[in-house]
Length: 186
Image (cartoon, rainbow, N blue to C red; front, side):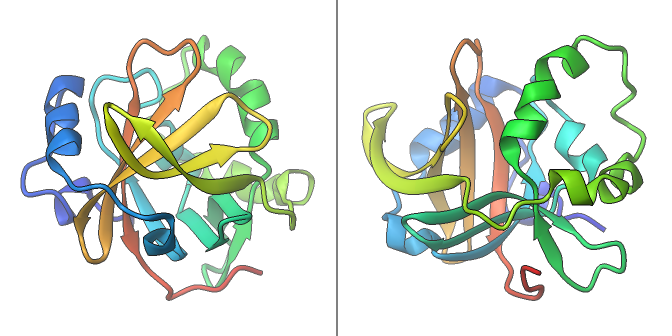
């Protein structure tokens, strides 16, 4: 069962404006704060990607150090460990897939698990830096092969709100992360 955004947010925003208010009110975080494994959940704001990551079985992210980041983690079929998906493969099909009438209310985790071998990577696919976003310097995950930055603000000692800032997007995609070292990357 996935973590709900309400598990980390006092109130779950339903619009981008509400999510941006929560983000802007939250303090910045240093990159060192992000080191560890984090379980993720989408925050619905009527973004075109809403429900897509949850439907694919996305589990979260891992920050080993500033140079070693695994941005897309998925559970193994038995749920005993995690594996890292190569994001360039996912982003390469994202735009055409988003144009299709796919019901993101269904689960596609089995399909992603079946495609693990060609989608998996052992190499880090992002870096962690401090960038200025919405006027504040804060920890940011920078994808190696895509014009996307995930910018973080602190909700608690073990939770952050993230905004996916994607080139050409009219609004950020919103998610939350909660520290969770219960599963190892395999």
